[in-house]
Length: 264
Length: 262
Image (cartoon, rainbow over the protein chains, first blue to last red):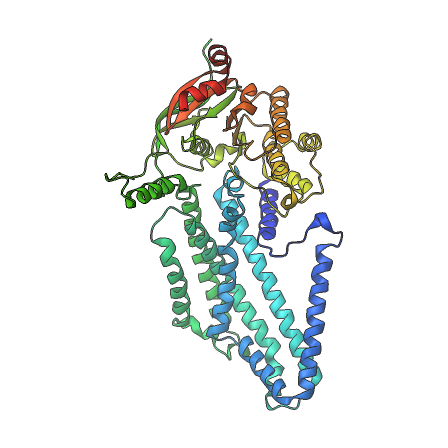
């Protein structure tokens, strides 16, 4: 069996492991995809109706919605930290889940390198993050289009015009830095199961230190609220390089810990 | 003729850093008694080794029963053979090599209290196993699933304990490997499932002879398939020998067990 087939099969299984949607195939014939689409449709239609109704009766409501949207989408310390935390949270729970589900005995005895096993978990976590970003992107675009269509008579209406651009910029930064936070999550998951004292405790502090370090370094220009107007391509490239370099180091550290310090 | 050994352990010692639930319970019970003034003397609760300078060998091509009371070190021994636990001292040889994930392509291991992926169906589990387990015989697995009354469309999360145990066993026995390690395959399983599991182990040996080590407390159910037995207690070997010979001397393996541990 080719290693790449094994890898992608593991990725597919790991992606399902992280799923909170428990569709019982034995009890129904509706496909999972149709159920997902239906759920999205209902949420979007209901959200649209509520928002449209709210804006129709109150300008204050419309103004608030635009202000919140503006705050959430524009790159700032809160949104960026949140976007960094998501890939970390997705991947850090993937490995402990094998213990929780009782499947770790099968997983750890697979005759493949720990690099392949952890790589599959990281990749599954990365795909989940991309899915999350896509949902975020589509939802915010939907809201923006809806508000523009409703044309509320409010002072901050002009803010909406470059919101799509800002969404795209925020998502790009999150995507460029995500390899590092994915590796950090994977390493955190491994450390939580390792026979090592101290390290699992200081790891969350390390996460915070990295965030603070990023915001106090020259790279902070990348996260400026007006950076989307003329994206600093060189800095963005540097951010991606640093993210990849650090993630590689962390990933190999995690492999070493899994191979030598994790026992069942 | 000199016997060949698939697995050999020489002077192996293993101590866990963390205390097991059994250790913690013993310590708690002791302290409770002491508070009531029934035990005036202090007792040392330092960690005892799970395996204590253990030297033992498992013959090639035979079904060996690995028997002993709780905390004897049976599960630790099996985990060591697949590299899930590393020894503190001593040497372990599995077909002449040290245990590592690199050799696990030749070993099928059924973990104690192990569960399969709940969101897969039985058919998906077998297809998944074909990809991730080297030398997995999908046709054989499907035949075994059929003979063990497993519905291919049933989701693993909906299977009863007995049915899930049958699936786990298929995932081990359908692999064309040299060594099979089964840790408590009969635990919490009804009589019918036990019989089916035993029959499948026998069929599997007839189909392709391999070395099988079964660690179990259900000696009565499994003793007919043992060709060799190893008794462990407190991490040390107390008896090992040919099962037929022991049966001839003591009547049954169960009698030997009672004699050793009662």
